[in-house]
Image (cartoon, rainbow, N blue to C red):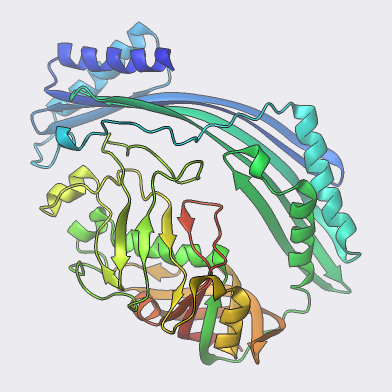
Length: 445
C-alpha cells in the first residue's frame, strides 16, 4: 500500500515539474486464482497478477492521459512526459479539470471490503469438484456439465490528485459457480447458478450452488413457444437488475449532454409510479458496490435517484456535470449499491412482496428468467430482447417457455411497474427484487 501511494505522489510531483497546472493519478494492484473442474477433471487453474497506473495532466484546460504497467523511476518520468506531450497539442475544453477540491473525501471510512481467502489451488479444485458433483447427483436428467468454478480475487486501489487528495482502499471478491446441461430424450437445456461475496465465509455452500444449477436446468426442460400476445411480465430478481442498468445508462451525464437519451430534461419529473424508491448506499459495509470515494476522489454519499416515482438526481462525473451546468454527483466510475425498495401501488407491506405474491398478483402472464440480445435503444427507449422463462396461469407456474421476444418501451415499462419484490438479489452493484410490469408484447409463433 505504502509503495503504491508513494508512486502516486511521484507521478504527481513529476507532472508538476513538467509544467502541468493540475494532475490526477489512479492505480491498482490485483491478484487472483481461478479454478474450473469439468466432469471431475481439472480443466483450468489460472493465477493472475495485474498492476497499472494512469496519469492525467492538465495544462490549463488542455488534457492528456497516459498509462504504464512499469513502476520504475524511468517509467514514471516517461509516462508523465507522454501525457504532457498529448496535453500540449490538444484543444482547450472549458470542462476539463479536476473535480472541485471541496468535494474531495475527507474522512475515508473502513467499509470492510477486504476479506482475504487463503485458498490453495488444491482446495479450490476440491471445492469446484464438489460443486459439480452436487449438481450431477441432484437429478438423473443432468446429462452433462460445463463445470464448477471457484474464483478468488484481491485488489488495492489508490487515487491522488494535485488538490492534495490521496486515498486508497483494498477489496476482495470471491465466487463459486456451476453450469450444467439437463436432458430428457431429445430435449436439452442449460442453466447455471453462482454465489459471490467479498467474504468467502458468506458464500453459499458448494453443494447448494450445484443443486440450484441442476434444478434450474431441469425445470427448463420441455419449453414451449407462445403465440404473440400482450400480457403482464415478471422479471426475476437477477434479470430485473438489467432494467435498472438501462435506467442508469439513460441518466448518465454523457448521454444527457449529448441529448441521446429518452430521459433528457426529466429531472424533477415523474418517471415511475409513486411507490418507487431508488437510492444509492455507497457505504454499506462489505457490500459489492461500496466505495468511500469515486474515481475522481469525490466523497460518495447516500442519495435518492428516484423518490415518489420522481427523478431526483442524475449520474454525473465532473466533466459531464460541467457540460450540463451542474455539479458532479460523485459517480465517476458508476453507481454504488443502487437499491430498489420493495413496494406496490396497494397497501402491501414490503416484506410480503415475495415472488409468490407477485405471481398471484399477475395471475396470467410471463415470468422471465433469462434475456438474450442487446435490443435496447437509449435514445428512444425502445426495448426488444429474446427471452425464456415460464408461463403463469392462476398465479401458478404452468410450463417453461422458450424462443420468445418481449418488447415495449422503457418509458412505458418504468411507468407501468405494478410491484417490486422483496426477493432482493445482493450479488452485484444493483440490488433489486423481481419486477412486475403491467403489460408488454410477447412475440412468438
